[in-house]
Length: 316
Image (cartoon, rainbow, N blue to C red; front, side):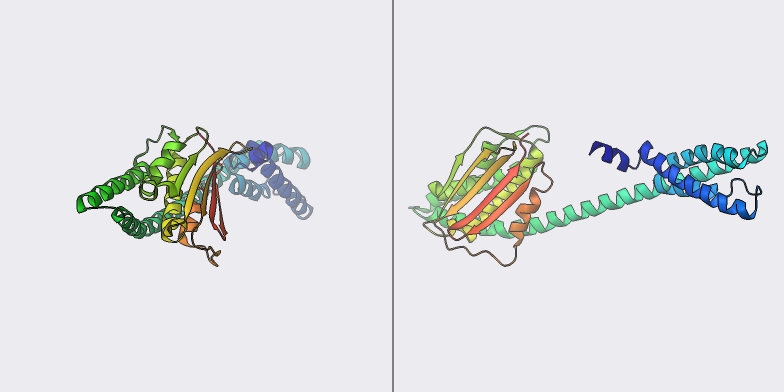
């Protein structure tokens, strides 16, 4: 794999040499054909396209190598030419190699910038869609929190205090997703507890964080994971186990044999689950959120007794 990566690299000397050899060989064959018609009259004419092709395919390195290879080859095979002709060839061929090499570099930079712009556009579209979706979910969550806070409250003050605490917990989870220190690792148990705090406060033992081994994760993985947990809990409140009085959710994690951390979300006791014909935005967002995370993957299963989700990612 390392050899293949070296060979495929656009700046590789090996790739430049192979391209130069191939282009020079074609120039040599063309030179033989021309020499059969006009012997000795156009000593380097077929090597100009070879230098141009090498520079456009693999950059200025390849063009320079094509000049260096074709010069002694032409002198050796087709005989010595006047010094002035050889010098003119070297100067003009070098100009061709530099010009086409610069064109190659410009094309490469434009292609890189185009690809980067396309990736940025995709990320921006996902963020916009996710924020719109999240705004709608926030109202649904607040409604559910208000209903849960109202249960058992004996007066308005008690209801107000319960609701205020749960809204603060929800705000803390959003804060973690937007202000996590870019360099400091995050402990998984803290991330899970903070992300699910608005739901554990409201649903108590019906949403149990069983936990697992102590694992530190990078902030780049923490924010997507918090988004996934938030989405899973939201769907459980709206459609899944937490939407009925008897439903329960458990959340735990462990290390896999491959060294990855696997976080499990298991729902049971809620409404009967049928696998949807089409993936909703929430399911797609859970999968997309972990795409850029090292070792990241998401497996969502719609089983009759409840949704099961496994989120895998590499620890820090």
